[in-house]
Length: 308
Image (cartoon, rainbow, N blue to C red):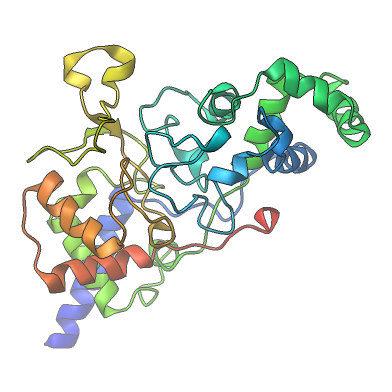
């Protein structure tokens, strides 16, 4: 009887997953030459005002695509107001940045370069530096007809970031039909993830990144003292958008601490308890939170070769 129940639960989970989740593709199409140029630009500190900060400074590809700090440190040691989201699988997000102010990766790539507390440069100065580099000139000649501009620089970086997918997690294998890819505890966590309501916001191919949601539905979410983050409201000035943010992806979540837009939550288990309280209005039991944690760790995928 127990065996029959386990088989029934596995089938039910599979059917449920088919309707709300999709596995990451095992590969995506991208221009490899442009992506390799973008990789070089991504790691180049000459894109910052004082040659000290690169895209990789806040989005370290060897550390889950984040910087591991509550909020990022920019030019001249300035502390930013918000936690850096992971760059991995960001091409699957419907918008970029927590507040959704960039419509795609290319637009996003242009923002930090000229942000005075991030990279603090001007594209005109960046272009002057790159024009003096023979290797860059050769690459831009071959790929962009010799045009080194904000448009071509951000296009190359976006092409690189497009390639930063992390397929073949245990959950991806489960979604593709391997019912044994998740162990018993991970399946329990997946069941609780759905029954407690996490799935309402964290679904789709990226388990997030496809809608806006209010940070703090059942109680006001903690804010950084002196730097209250108002989310979409900062852009729209519409009161209904106050505290609304792009729902973050949960893929590789075990590697991207600290958590939330404020970056004040240091470990995943605490983040799960907080999400239960602030977003779902439930007090999770310890064993429930640990099961959900086990499921979330099953979302860790393989780092692509181009990121190494």
